[in-house]
Length: 188
Image (tube, rainbow, N blue to C red; front, side):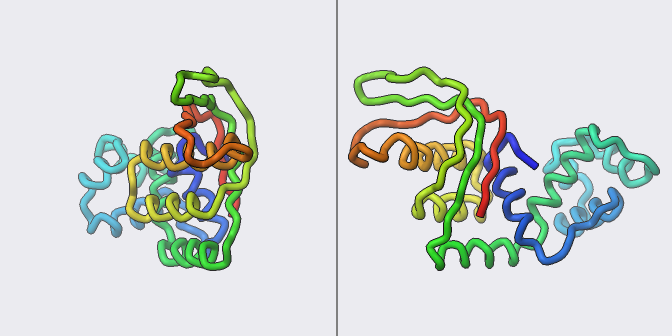
């Protein structure tokens, strides 16, 4: 399972550490999400960015389409919220044991230096190992529900350190831009 956002890719990687499976049926998933919002269906609909009547439809329908955006939003939110203590424990174990994080992605990656652009964004497919400080920054940002832009900036910095700065001094004013993610997956 791959993702198009950093947040979703981290959540899917965390799913490999779960000790129990999340609810499977749409009704059980909605019940779980409603418990997370204190039973407030309007708040859940707002968080999922779907109309409230679609949640009623998901709850009562016998058959569900996998392509339904509301169904996909419910699934993403269940993955995001399932077993938070297991997720934090896995992150702590990885950080305390000098663990590795691999990232595999296909995206438009650009490189900008202080003197100007040295590389227009190009479609690249890479698999890299991320360095320890960036792993901790990604986990910390994810725990506090940082916006996607911040997660993408941290990942861009990590990719720059892993890929472009292998032979360059770290103090240079070069930046990496990660644009239009087509595929993204973390392994840890």
